[in-house]
Amino acid sequence: MGLVIILTVLLAGCEAQSDDTMIAPPPPEVDVAEVIVEPVTLWESFTGRVVAPETVDLRPRVSGYIDEVAFEEGELVKAGDLLFQIDPRPYKVREQAAHAELALANSQLQLASSEANRARTLVERQAISREEYDQRNAALLSARARVQVAQAALDTAELDLQYTRITAPISGRAGRALVTQGNLANADQTLLTTLVSVDSVHIYFDANEKSAISNQQLLANGGPSDVRITLGEEQGQQFLGYLDFVDNQLNLGTGTLQYRALLQNQQGLIRPGQFARVEMPVARLDSALMINRKAVLTDQDRRYVYVVDENNRVMTRQVDTGHPVGELLVINNGLNRGDRVIINGVQKVFATGMEVRPQLIAMRELPLNMLAAAQELSQ
Image 1 (cartoon, rainbow, N blue to C red):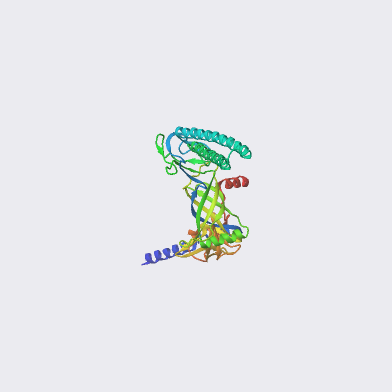
Image 2: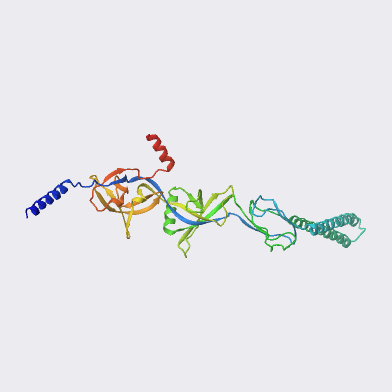
């Protein structure tokens, strides 16, 4: 019995000693950043399609057999370059015949002119009748008309001969040859190839009514007409274009307004038909409150952030988020200037009101090259 009492006393003493030596864990360390307040232009993204400003379906103006295809398919051509040659021999024969007809008509005109002049002298001497005089003048007028007809026929023959050389009407990129050497091409019917201009391209896209109204208000107040265009993948190369056309009415079926942006394409790398992502400015805020996207948490349809107060206690703030600006989000409601928001370490927060150890960092993440430069300066 005495042994039991001694053991009980010893165990109680050990438990008391263990309770006395327990130490509460320190507050968790989190990264916080102050809300950014600065002027910003808000952009919205739309899907667009690349279209060539000029597109030509090349067809012959005269019929004939193709003698030569004088271009490389898919290559750039200049206005005036020979693309197709139709057999010119039949048209050369017609031109020569027209020259002969004109020469004959001129000789007949010369004869009729001489007879008319002679008749004028004879009628003054009353050597011929007035009727014969009128007949010779009529013959002169008829000869002149025949010369005009022959000249018109020659002009037509020369044009037809020129049309056997089918040249590029615009500078651009040629498609494939749809008719090859030896095949018959019918005037105004046979499609030979297609040309598209490439020095600049148009990007057509449709903006919803709300965004269109905001953009129109921004433009009316002298806002930028520049747009950012990304081709290919989400992280593809970005280009800068500008708005050069806005449709005069909304599409009743879709409720959208069509825009067109002009993009320079001097190297010809952008092809008509490509999809493009177009970012267009829709508003300008003089003092926007922004935080890093990583700070925003979701709970069903509710968005909130953790804010650290002056006592390093965590508070929950429900926020109304707006447009993205890079890695930042515009906050419409829920935060104030000077608020410190937890960016990294939100998983360490278990309850509102708990104490944390805040480490102040920049709200906007620096690019890698700027971060390396900052580290060098700090050393």
